[in-house]
Length: 403
Image (cartoon, rainbow, N blue to C red; front, side, top):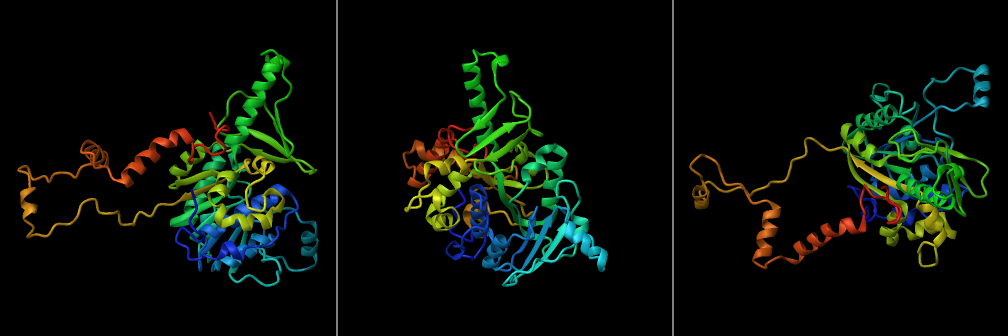
């Protein structure tokens, strides 16, 4: 659970949850939901004077600019893919050319309170560290990705390149966080739909219609019908109701994401379905969510039934780059030289007795019936994890788990 009380993870930004109370700039429901999730994560992790880098950044996203303004960061670097711009190409013919890989922050009123820089590159194919050395936001305290991470799972090479770039740009103890489609939920819905079609068709694949997922809010269609969830390259199309555009994505295999992140030097802190994330942090973010998607919550801030269907398609993720210089906690207390117990514990072979492990302490306490309340709670929580199926390897509602 990421309920850090606003400005967690070392932040002192405790009032952002009330400051960021504006309407979304997106017209689509899922777009407003993603903007809410981004604003909530910024509220939790951002802190004053931080250096921030955003992957697949939209330079004209005024809403994100406001979020970072409220967080009082010092430096921002946006990395995005250069898109064709006929107007800009025409202007180049009549004037001096701008540097090929840099573009200015768009004219916004008011201007951003932090230094902003933008760089054209593809984080899943290019080596970013050599080109970004010396920029204000590198190395970054925070690195985020609110768009397109799922496209990097087209192949293992692209996913590994992305995570290598993240690790190389991030400071030790820094966080990498963002939003991604919840592939666990999507795949489980797909499997249930296939099972229903098999049952309806008499159990033979020849009688099956093309596999898809349909609800009142969206339709998901897979390009290739498969019985297994491949780790990479599983493409699908997502079309929301009342929208003409069709989005193309790849399923993100969460175990592979965690494995590749660990290889790159990043530890997974949390992968959590957006419905669970909102429920865990509703007291802090209900007002913010109501301003982004007022039609998805009741007056008390509780999610309406239709909102579960849309929020359940997305997850938040959080990784951290460990600090190798961090001082580990002391396992045993330091004893003074004149402490008589110091000599009594000395063993003849020159080895001091090792302190009992946590499991041994708990077992000893249980045998003497002196288990404390805190220990009992810890044991109960550990035994309930499997029953609730919550945690980084099981995002999504309980009945939508990746088998």
